[in-house]
Amino acid sequence: MKDTAKHQGLRNQLVNVLEQKGIKDKNVLEAIRNIPRHLFLDSSFEDYAYQDKAFPIGAGQTISQPYTVAFQSQLLEVEKDHKILEIGTGSGYQTTVLFKMGAKVYSVERQHELFKTTSHLLRKLGIRPKHLSFGDGYKGLPNYAPFDSIIVTAGAPFIPKPLMAQLKVGGRLVIPVGEEKQIMTLLIRKTETRFEKHEFGDFRFVPLLEDKN
Ligand code: SAH
Image (cartoon, rainbow, N blue to C red; front, side, top):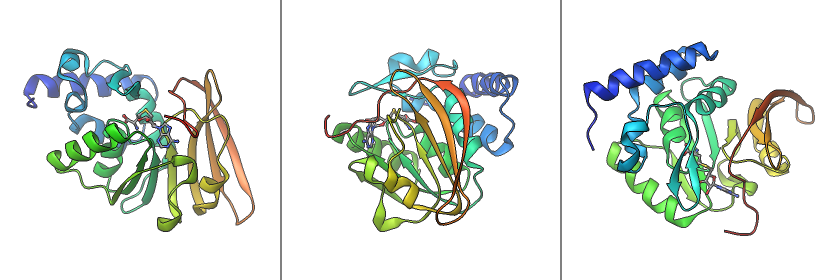
């Protein structure tokens, strides 16, 4: 698949929609304006790629809705060279948004099939995260910690302790918490032992899986 002027036009419209829905971070909006989302989807979804919707990406998983990607990315307050951990690589679209914003991205995926196809796709597109890992996101990536921020892109029944431990002081953890639906939650690590919690309303994600596939 190619990226064309038509795709660019649809992306500009999508960015307008996201601005109307309240996304303000210019760097987030520019990343979304520049990334060909249709390349992260099966070709049968090409015509729909710039609607503000989630789509299936195989292995029972979804690429998050652009508004959700933008909302989470904005909460991270990404700065150039920030070291960011993503849990749930999935299609690699969110990984790419963070990479294009200048972050050093580490990402973990639990499903081997997705890990393989997405690693291949990102290499092909010239997107270079610092590290892609096949494994259990509940554990984070202790060997690469601490991180400036951590983003979880699946619904977590609770906030995993290892992720809190792998955050720098001043760092931000953005995680949708809940079973059926999730409350978007931001934890800011104020000191070694104190975390400040903010909540941002309901979202719906595929579940963060524990001990199963
Ligand atoms: N960021 C992705 C969203 C994919 S959906 C994107 O932009 O496309 C959530 C992803 O989390 C799925 O790919 C799913 O396989 C993965 N996942 C679920 N449980 C996980 C776990 N315990 N550790 C790591 N990844 C997990």
